[in-house]
Amino acid sequence: MKNLSKIILIQLTLITALSASGGIGGGGIANIPQGQDREKYHLGKAVYNQDITLEKQTNVKLVEQEERLEYLQGSLPNTEKRRVNLPDFAGKLTEEQLLALEYFIQIRFNVKFPDKKKE
Image (cartoon, rainbow, N blue to C red):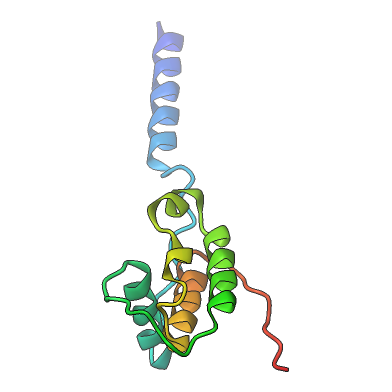
């Protein structure tokens, strides 16, 4: 009887310890930047969530924007790919908005983009 009670006590201790450990946590979200980058982050977030109205832009390189937006779309997690279609924004973003969108995705989804070379 003593052995049975010891076994039950050990099992209860193990079960409690395992459930209290918290398990494996998700990767989480990177910290929202402070200072100047904060405005850029929030502009990108507004574009991503379609919180601002996007008007057709006249002085943009449409093909370049399409390529950049398709690349961004491909770098999103699968759940986000179903939620938002970034190539639809082509021709509607200013350069500032596009850079902010890239920055937001880089921070929010921990995506690394190749360095752009200035020609």
